[in-house]
Image (cartoon, rainbow, N blue to C red; front, side):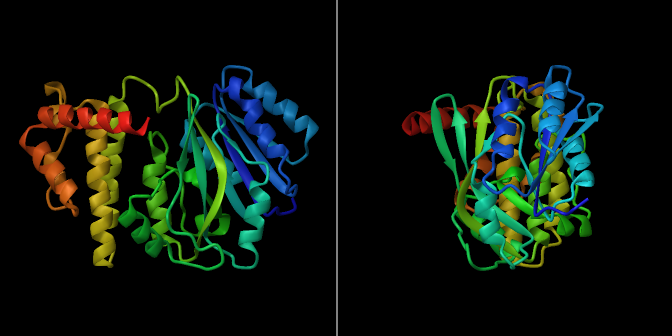
Length: 323
């Protein structure tokens, strides 16, 4: 099979309401020489048939039907079966701009970057909110470690895997896969990939439209499992970050773990007594770098319940002034 410049991998499960808009944004790209890999993750609705209908009309589409294994498994299967030099992940309830691949083509040129970073629009009801990074080097190369350092300092390091385009050979050489059975798998995948990347281009391209929909993981009411998986990810990343030689970067990464851990505690409501044994407060000691995080950790370790309600109130006030 002839190698394409881009492979776009779409994991699909119970999204028939959104799938047409997603796939239409791919087949109608202004840059035509692409491969589209639709991974039907055992979807019980009409998604499998919709995928096959698209494939029958467009030879660029490769449909893979498999038993349900979750988002990570579907992405990994897509990676194993794609033929492109670069890969882009698109969630099946989202969509991309029609000129996305054309713009990325111009950026890549002959530079052979390991990662190309883009930007997104977050769609919540009728509101549009930007998801952007602050470092932009459209015509030059930066290391993944330097990129992480800059973005972590500015609080703009987004971990969503779909914000970036990856060189497939780079992923394969380093055996980068998404951890299966894990919620918020991007939180575990993205920082490890950037730590290894030697050639990163961060663009000003806004190409991805991220839909927050009812019934998604993001909007589910019971998030205890989400919280526990985030805590598990924090523990794994702690081991990875401890091996980072750059002291400043290591401190920034560990400070980011503080935010991740406290966010897990907050979204899962782990201040309740029945979860006391699940929350390891000792994990936070010595990791906070900023004054803000040091204060949050102190309050958390002093009284988790007080921290939970204080943080919730501050979040409501913050959201009010953003509205």
